[in-house]
Image (cartoon, rainbow, N blue to C red; front, top):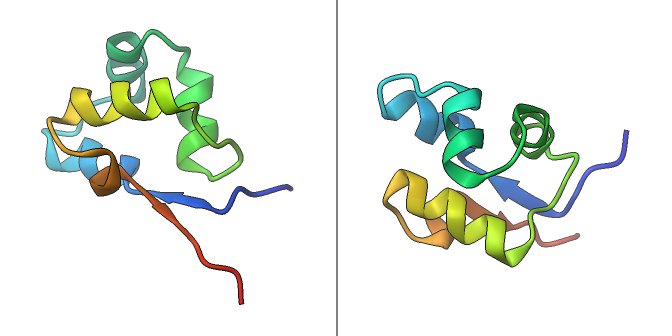
Amino acid sequence: MTTTPIANQIRRLRFERGEMTQEILANACGVTRQTIIALEAGRYGPSLELAFKIARAFGVGVEDVFQWKESA
């Protein structure tokens, strides 16, 4: 399984917002639930546009959702 160097806090943020479902987040961002699943699992790095949409859905900044993992 390939992973991206972009970590995210999507799952934590969903649960902090009343256990928002992946489907609700996907609909708010105009993507499929499968895209949200892949993002949460770290199998997919979002486009800049999608990163902003997700952050806006949570009412936070992009860096509150996504972080770059430095390679060792």
